Amino acid sequence: MNRPTPRPLLIIGAAVAIVVCVPLVYLVIRAFGSGWGPVERVLTSPITWQAAATSVALAAAVAATTVVIGVPTAWLISRARLGWRRLWVVLVVLPLAVPSFVAAFAWLSLFDQLTGFWAAWLVLSLATVPYVILPTAAALRSLDPAHEEVARTLGIGPRTAFLRAALPQVSPAVGGGALLVALYVLSDFGAVSIFRVDVLSRVIYSSYRASFDRTSAAVLGIILALLAILIVAIEQRSRGRAQRWRLATSAPRQVPPVALTSGWRAGAYGLLGAVAVLGVGVPVAATVNQFLTGASAGIDWPDLGAAISTTVLYGVVGMVAAVVLAMPIGLLAARYPTKAAAVLERMSFVGHALPGVVVGLAVVFVGTRLVPGLYQTLPLLAFAYAVLFIPKAGAAIRGSIATVPTVLEDVARTCGYSPWRAFRSVTMRLASPGIAAGAVLVLLTVMKELPATLMLRPTGEDTLATRLWALTEIGSYAAAAPYALALILIGAIPAFFLAFPLVRAVSPSDSAPATSGDQPLPEREGVRQ
Image (tube, rainbow, N blue to C red; front, side, top):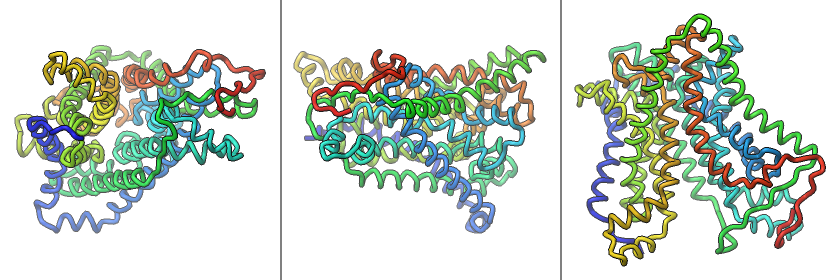
C-alpha cells in the first residue's frame, strides 16, 4: 500500500518539474513569436534536414559501436578471469575523464588531415563507450547465475547460454547505456565542430552567433530537442517490452570467473588494451606532447590556475543545484510512487532529452527577456546545469532511496524519532553512497560541459573547457595543451570514483595474473563452467 504523499513535498516537486520545463516552453514561444514565415524558411531549407540526418546517423553509428565494444568489455571485466582485472576496470572507465572535444583536439594534433563524419564517429565512440560498459558490468555482476544454469541443463553451450539467457536480462542496462551515448552524441558540440561535421548542434550555435534574429536557432533547437525526445521514447518503449525473470527469491550468487583459453585470452587483452590505449592513451600522449611543446614557449600559469579554480567552482555549484532540485523528485518517485509522482518525474527528464546547446539557447532567451539582471551570472548558469543534469542526479536519488526498506524508518519512529529525523538518520545514511555516486557523475559532466557554458558564463570568466575551445578555434594547439591536460587530470578523479564499486567487487583471486597454465575453476553447487 502506498503511503499518502505529503502535500508540501508534492508542491515542491511540481515546482521543480515546471521550472525544468521553462526553457523548452520559452524556446517554442520564441520560435513562433515572429509568425509562421521564419519557421517555414527553416523547415524548408535543405541544410536543416541534411544536418538532422547527419545528427541521427552519427548518433546511431556511435551507439551501435559502443554496444558492440562495450558489452564484450563489460563481460570481460565482470565475468572473465584476467590478470590485473582491477587495473583493467579502471583503464576502460577512464575515457570518461577525457571530454570528447579534448580527444578530438588530441587526435587532430597527431593527424591534421583527420576530419569529417568518420573522424567524429571514431572519437565519440572511444569517448562514450564507458556509458555502456559501466551499467552492463554492474548488471552482469548482480545477475543471478540460475538463468544460465537452467539453459546449460538443456544441453546448450556456455556461449549460447549467455546470449539466450543472460544477455536478455541485462538488455535494459545495455539499452540505457546506448541511450546515454545517443543523447551525448546529439548534444555534442565540441568534437563535431573540431572535425567540421555539420550536425544540428553546430548549425544551431553558428546561427546563434551569426544573427541578431535568433528565430532560426530556436526552430533548429526545437528540432534537435524533438529528435532527442523521440530517441528517449523509443528506448523506453523497447525497455517496457523487455521480459525479465528472477528464478530465486534469495540474493543472487556470484558467478565464478571463467578461465579463458590462450587464444581467447589474447583477444580479450587485445580488446581491453585497445579501449584503454585509444580511449585514454592516445589523447593523453598527444596532449602531453603538445604540453611539452608549449612549455618551451612558456605557460600562462596564472590564467591556467584561474581556469582550474573556475572549473571546480562551476562543477560544485552545478552539482549542488542539480542534487538539491532533484531531491524532491527522486524522493517522490521512490517513496510515493503515485501517478502524479510519475508525471513529475517524466517532466523533470525533459533535461535528459535537451542537448546543452538547446538548453543554453533557451536560457539565454529567458535571461535576456525575463530576468536580464541575472544574464551571464553564476546563478543563471547553475540553473542551466540543473536543467541539464537533474535526470542524472534524480535517477541516483530514486534508485538509492528505493533500496532502503520503509520498515526501517517505521522502527526508528517507534524509538521516538520524528519523521524527518528518521528519514535523515536511517534512509539518507543508507542511501548516501548511491546519491554520492550520482552527484559525482553530475560533477564530472558539468566540468566537461561546453556549449551552455560558452553561452552563459559570466563575462571575463573561463573554465578549462571554454579556454581550451577558444585556443583550438584559432589553431593554437600547443597553448591549449595545458588546459586539456588539466581537464583530463581533474576529470580522472571523479571517473575513478565511479569505477570504484566495480573495482571493489573484484576479489583478489580474480585479479591474480592469469597464466597459460590456468585451469577452469571446479564446479560449485551446480554451477557449470
